[in-house]
Image (tube, rainbow, N blue to C red; front, side):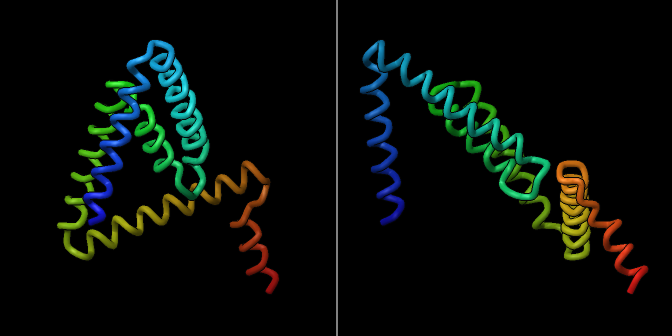
Length: 137
């Protein structure tokens, strides 16, 4: 049922976009709106990449917005999907110790990014404060 609804929505969206593209003014306006919306989402995503959160997800979402109108974005999005699926498939077929090691490396990376972000953006050195706390208590 949900699959049928999604198919209907996509078909309705395609029809609407085709109607907009049929008019020269609509085509240019659509291209400009898609360009600006995609650029805003990608820019916010790139700004959020060093922070914990949905940075890469927003970059990919911005690519998805651009893919509505631009062939190069569709190709790049397909390339990204292919490699993410390949990486996921590879990681899930590894033995548990390898998956734990991959997860640990990911956690260390995210922790380092959070620490550096706090230290250099807000001037809060969490490691120094923790060491100071341990030394005084």
